[in-house]
Length: 294
Image (cartoon, rainbow, N blue to C red; front, side):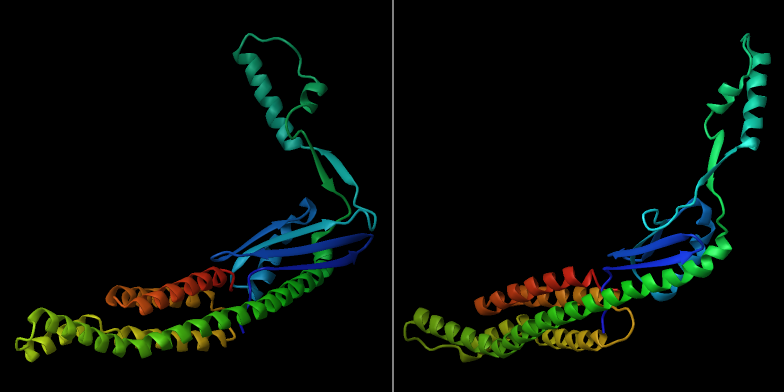
């Protein structure tokens, strides 16, 4: 069964005195892209989270947000520290400036404290390794919720797509039945026209048959109809596969479009042309829907 690329999952876990909230949201994307926002204290866990997601999903833009819910429990207090390595570089650069240029003044604490990134903040009391033991379960729970939503939406997509393919198959069946009749109608129109122009004179039956044969050959759409039917069969097979088929379906729709365009260019019959327009419209709607399939 097909799966959508749109979904949402949420979970909460408690680690020590903190309650962590994990939210996953996925949208359409050609490939799998994972964007993660989490506190600096546990930034080292980003690779762990990405691996969890890539093991379960193959396509979609996945946005991961992990935060400490201060409204639910005590949030970690920030700890301020001097960025000593950076301050040493600042101090040395300022001294170099004083020796190189005729500037005066002392290097003060206030000056140093105002420099960019002179003071850094970090959450204290958070050990990423310890947090991951609890956070991993939360990520798995949120990911499971996301996948379930994607599967549920996939079921709705499946019904809509199959309904549209059924309508297309009906139109193609009508085109197939109509094709031989188009040749016979052309033969009748041509015969009547020749008789009218000849005004009772003998008619060259062989030449007439030759003209009809040429027209029938030029407008023959049998191969296109057969290939389109084959594509439809492949469509139904892919829809039953248990693996991601979004890209395969998208390619198949391109092939269907190619066949129906050829049919439209070969025939001059008004009824077939009308059906071609209907099929192309449904294929366009299918293409829009398929963009959301994993």
